[in-house]
Length: 326
Length: 123
Picture (cartoon, rainbow over the protein chains, first blue to last red):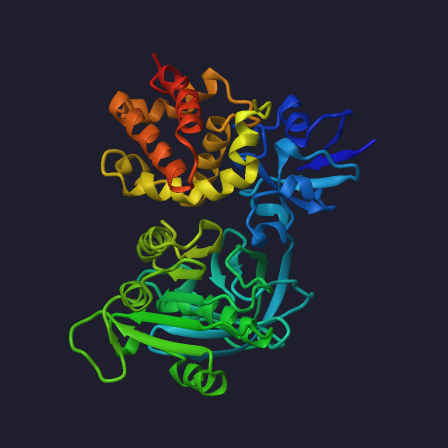
């Protein structure tokens, strides 16, 4: 008999019963629609055990790798522990020591963390960092698991930002904080190494992109990799030296800093990062696109990239939504 | 005489996969209906388009009339009407034409889509 664990409950799977039927028949409110494994409304995640491959058909590769599956076509023959994608508490809290804090520009702090327990993540994913039990925020990882010993975050100080203000103003090296994660499906997947990559980021949206780029390069990605990093003015850009070094080291990597404010500077593209990118590369068929940062930019660029020929499955996005309570 | 089902004649799941991006692009670029897609999660929407195409291609699905009514009720409240259904069926036909499907099969697909009209418009 196969057992499905959900939250604190354990259910026995009846013969020929899908995980969706098993859960909804017993009162778990799993949303669903087509019941044919197509519409993805009933997507869940296995937090223990491996979902059958047939229940992952049509899902984005980055979701498959994280054991997401479609409950309506999931007929497992081994036990599964499952959660809804929005369930927050599916990961354990891990303590981490702050090793260093360093300003990257006037508003963005580089935070280096050493986890007290190993954390299995992919460059470009995010973690939640907690100021206290009730107050946490998501920050993207700029580090690469096999390249960097510790976790790296780029924390932008938001006006009235409670957690970012605390990180900038009060946090000190040596202190221990609590984190949870990783999460997110915006990361590099090895394979198809000749495919062109376009990465567009605004502000600290560079953090995940910097990780993704170094991950792709170190895994031997041979196709062209174009990074467009945008800010209003020069002060908002950062890591330019490191990125220029990567340009020198890898002939397939190209870095385009973009300034959307008034005044054109030599060596910088003028305009918003997404506009500059889509002007330089207008046919996006067969390109893989990564979009991180300002939610409006991510939303607009996603639509533009799709209409310009990029396939939906090749668009990876992480919108940095600002918490309502700041 | 072919004994293949419509879904098989069209090429099954591979045909749906080939059609979904083209169809979704047409819908998003169609001024008559694009407003209904303004604030939706594109990823989720693409999956829904795929489910719709699977159904319209005569493929396996479990949609009921009630599902159609529930799924579109919020759009009917925003003014969804016959002209919008017409636009979707037109875009569907144009997608299939672009993929080189013959007119006879396109008519069959359009007929299946047409059969959902009253449920979609909740009448």
